[in-house]
Image (cartoon, rainbow, N blue to C red):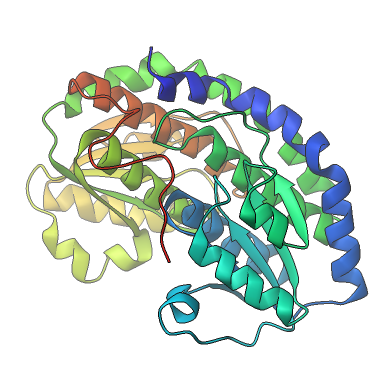
Length: 345
């Protein structure tokens, strides 16, 4: 059994403990934001952590109505410039907490008096020590290079922070259901594995989603890239309608995450277009009519809140990537040319 699979199995337990580990810190952050409101949010991260940040961007803009920018750390590290962040909430996300470029963003923000939060899986890491507040993933050691349980903890902590910031009790109740939804998803692992068998010889694919699930398209593509060496590319459905669609030819594999919710209509439109182009379509959805639009399908559990479906879809993406890697005779725990901690400036 691979470490990646073992760590996927741990995700329900990780999420169960995540809130209790961070409840006091979340309350302290919201008190800080009430005392001195911010006009915007800046998120600094790379790779998988950046995809968590994209989820945070959508969530904060939808729930709080304030703009969220994804930081360009190179402005600080390569060009030696500072950005005015005095009225911002600045969030740095890094599994190891050793991301040197995100650290420079937090350093600059603290000097300016901005509210700063680090989300890491290492309590004594440089980022955790530098930020005013630290949200701890508490996922335990992640041995596989392919991040799974830490990504799930990151998006969960972002969601809990936003729920507390908004005082949204309904959203908090929805978030409390995530461990059980993940357990249900694990019960579908054999179904996902059977679908993966069709993709043994896949060398390239596109992965599409929109809105809250757009970061899951990005993360699903990255997981397939790093574990199976497939040229996978994630797009927002809305963007794919434009230039990228020209790359779709007969039997091109396309995976579409299309759960019920605000983005379903647009996803169904792209599915119709893909069918006419002769693409090989895998649909991940909880809508029966939409599932029927694919050559193959993975049915997810019934989740009505579009803010929550990314958690289920993230696990589906991880299970798919892990099984594809093993099916191809590869080791998802140790992808070639990669290490667990990547240092960038």
